[in-house]
Length: 280
Image (cartoon, rainbow, N blue to C red; front, side, top):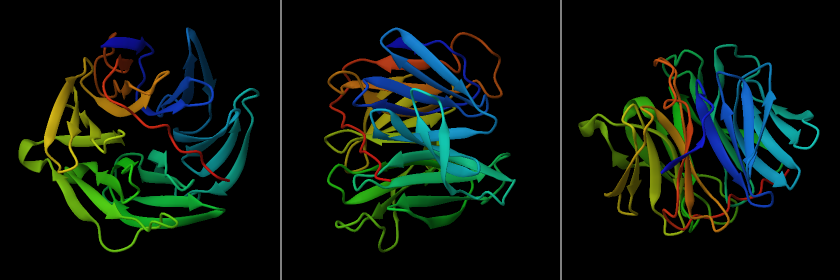
């Protein structure tokens, strides 16, 4: 394990490895900043609102989620153009966890800025349509997808349960009711962001417990990575061969130091998959 980037994010989130740029992007949601690092070069962009998650469209374009909209973001210029609104008429909420799906859609969760109970929801943007999938969520997290396209995973962190939602093989829209895949309530663990590897193992950041836990396809714990930061937030696979695991963290509510809020690198963990391209 090593420190990939020492910037002390108040709420580091949304790591995304851009496969055509060999670059990691991530956010400080509460700091209203987007970071990237390619090689030894770190770049950042400042915003006037909370931005939290991204997907890649092409070499020079990202989709960004903010508290009021989805945006098309031009990496070289830093210019952004609104794609559609996202709870723009609700000042209580902001975007949180999100990820592209294997069909070229983009899933994004919202939550109350003060974690108001059941103020959030999960949406999917797909081929020009933003559709609400799940409502009454307090803290949306762990949005990711099985490599065989059979299901999506997500959690409302306060429930301490990760759900598995069946998906239509043709277009990725949910069908049927979600089921509890992993119940961490007996252990008092709080699931945050998550990502799957090529084998279908689910790697979950555990907020407040200084670790990332890898769960097998049967939901059992397979491996535990100790993270120096108390509040790890989200993992993402990247690196030249997609075997490195990057983990963001937060110093929100903690004493500021060189540990909490940094972004960490765990080399050669497992075979990851390239993040799918978002189709606009």
